[in-house]
Image (cartoon, rainbow, N blue to C red):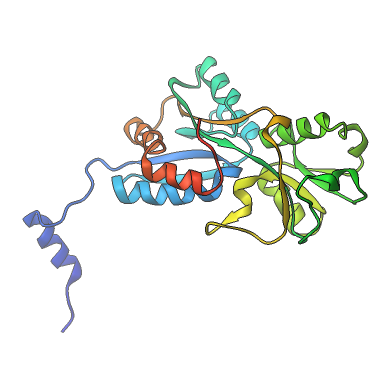
Length: 252
């Protein structure tokens, strides 16, 4: 005998024994590439807890700014800096009152090769072939990488060794595939399942670059303002904060 699950569910729904989320909506989120893994987990929790769904798009903050200015259909931006959301608010492209720092990022020099990157980053002064960084014109982590090398007095001398990715994801891919010996990336990218991935790394001292304050903002005219605001509010919840910290981010 076959169980009629649709009919059974409809009956339970009619009796009020199960319920569907009221006014569940969709949030179209533009998310900085460094925050890919954490936000996927947070979005799953958000959907389970609220019924709202999140459509995630990942990329470089600079590119997202250009797309948003051109009218791209996003509801919220989770940037890799605090200057882009502030600019968006000034230009009337977002709600300035919704802006807040959801994470403070950390820069790391990573190589897939065990033992290649030392604990003090002295490899930058040694002989190597290619070093990948995110394009500073598009990605805040690229700016941090450039600032680090400038403070170490290495930026000018390493120009022939540097390859640039359009996003922090592509930057890591260069090192992961062997197209670069190492890469300046986000610490969060080196954490998987609560553990550091294989390879070697140097967590860059925060004194060598401007703090990477990553801000979120609700954009102008979201398709579902209540859902968009609920998602940013959820980023401040204990559940979301636990996920954010587990990927090595600090909070302001």
